[in-house]
Image (tube, protein in one colour):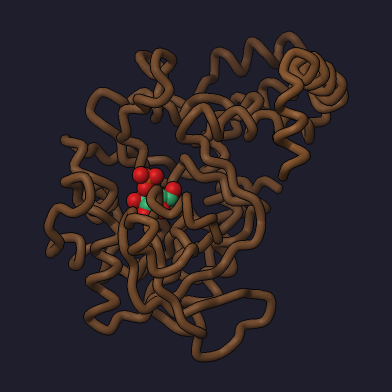
Length: 323
Ligand code: G1P
């Protein structure tokens, strides 16, 4: 489902006008591709990850995407520009479908760039977006373009939870104990009340990338945040944390300690991590199989690749049977 810019503006609800997208990372895990192409422009089938985020933001009813970019990565913004010559050329050749693809990003949402001069961490990147917000915006959404949270719509649930409990709301995903060291991990208790159709918990604390033994749970932060504007004040008061970086997790933890209500929506759906080839490849297979045009041929092609691989490596079948 795709909203046009106008439809999104009409649909704006829950106070989310702006979605911040931190996109200043160096993309080292995708070298050599990322020497010249920002990781956020790498396609899932044919659509760059950043456009999938723009689509999700537009579906939420947001009007504006504030993309936090590094000084040498401004070309991400070109994707949201107008391509009149190309579009006209395509239309003249009767290629309407392709012309629509060309104009889609520009029509979805207003994208503005904010520059993060130095890579000082996710918390710092989010803090850079504050001047781009209007005075009356009391909450802001943050979507990390590495994370595809499926099916789309978890942010709508998060908006409902903020309407009910106020404060800030994050998205939680359950992982295995061996995976927690990669994430912000939540310490949770039962929420004050149930909300129909939403699994919601109250957050007692949050810790960035703890060791397995120190993790308070296996519920981790997954790239979708609905933050009260108070987060900017907290971001201004934290010290460098994990990895010597200013962590968004630490600002949220500070807010919790100061009595700010924080809840999570536990998402039981699917998630792809586009931040590294190990997650990007399955995302392409998943989207590819579901693609009208490519899915039908991809399915037998994958089966053939798998059969060939299994013949060469019978041990993978034994491993599979062991669980
Ligand atoms: C960031 C956050 C972390 C969160 C993760 C979700 O880490 O710092 O709290 O769990 O995103 O993907 P990164 O993956 O940027 O290291």
